[in-house]
Length: 146
Image (tube, rainbow, N blue to C red; front, side):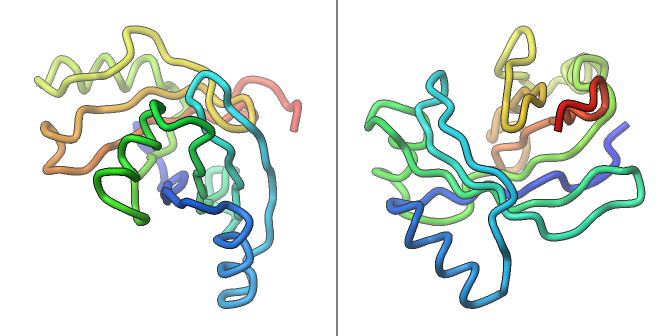
């Protein structure tokens, strides 16, 4: 069962400038940064709030590290802006299977490693009214290595 909005992913050309905008404008501070070589992005997670299920909601700022990454291609076509929305779940595998059975294309056969050690998969935007949708099981849901 989906429990919350885990994060909203925002694609940007310059991560440092975008982080500074969100810090100066809204007071959001960086909670976590990392480079995900598999996905070809450098990212910053800005924590917005805690949630009732023990998780949190974030803005995920994404700068491509290579032009051929999914985010790099998306930026070249669309420019900066909202890239995807992610819903939190305690069971990314089960929820992905349930959603797949409802006719929505799940982009990964098996969930992959996402930000902060989470497990993730994506749903095809053409099956979700034009919205790239991510399902996320936070690492804390299985182990507290935060």
